[in-house]
Image 1 (cartoon, one colour):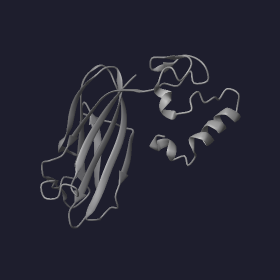
Image 2: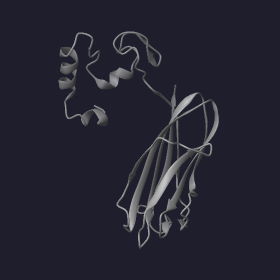
Image 3: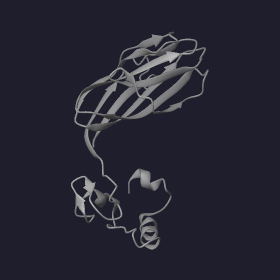
Length: 191
């Protein structure tokens, strides 16, 4: 059973039972969740789109490609304006797609102060971003940003920028890679 389904706290049998008993339109078509991605497991499935029935508006996403970059260059800034973070840039050629972008950067420096990261696609800030960050004013702050962006077919550049509110931001993978790690992951989903 996939991890996201386990988080519901129910067994597959409990989920299947709920689907079968809470309405005649709701049916579990397969006894194994992994079978859902097999076109033979669901009636009316045409390639990546369910064409009719209860799930007619649902789409099963198709991952086209995954690209990632790991920061290896030591980096620091005292800039209160956003600056590019080294090694946090990916150029990707896509079709008409949706990009799931995940950026993770640790900040470590005595004295703390606030710090932020953001994601840009083709030099435009992705406005709808989910931010998770460690406690402000701590010596080590973990920053994670997740964004979803629709793109047209072509070449696109995804990058991460960072800034501080005060103090210094140091990210030094050469001295302590696990502590000062940073990653950029771009996953393309076909529309």
